[in-house]
Amino acid sequence: MSDDHTQWFIYADENLAVARLALGSGFYNACLQNIQQAVEKFLKAALLVQNEPLQKTHNIETLFRQVVASGVEVELSEEDCELLDSIYIPSKYPSGSVLPEFSPDKEIGIQCIEMAERVRKKVQDLV
Image (tube, rainbow, N blue to C red; front, side):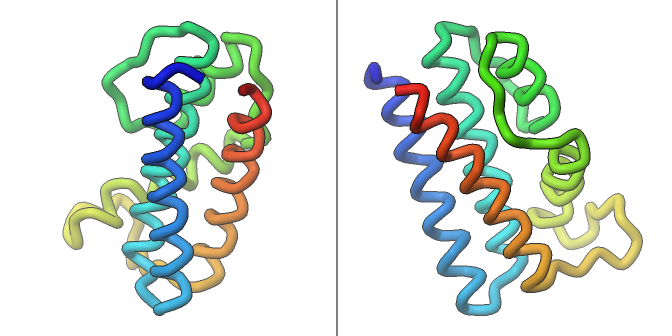
């Protein structure tokens, strides 16, 4: 893995570790924010492994489609991408939610950590 790939992967791993800690401490909003960041960075690492250009985007679905188009199968569904994209703004800004009465909880945190772990495994397997 080149330095660029390595750095993206390390940063993603750090976000995932913080998400786990946040979940265990009941900080569900911080958990979700770090999960979204982890998945975004894992996908960008996968693109770099495939020598694909990086887009300046936080959109998981866009990155996922680019990774798949590069020939890498990542275990995320369209619904998973939509979920991760839907929590990006609400997890950062309290009044920015596009979801009515969005309130992160342990269940959604666990679900999203499992998504991030699947993506991590696939990217790790690329190298």
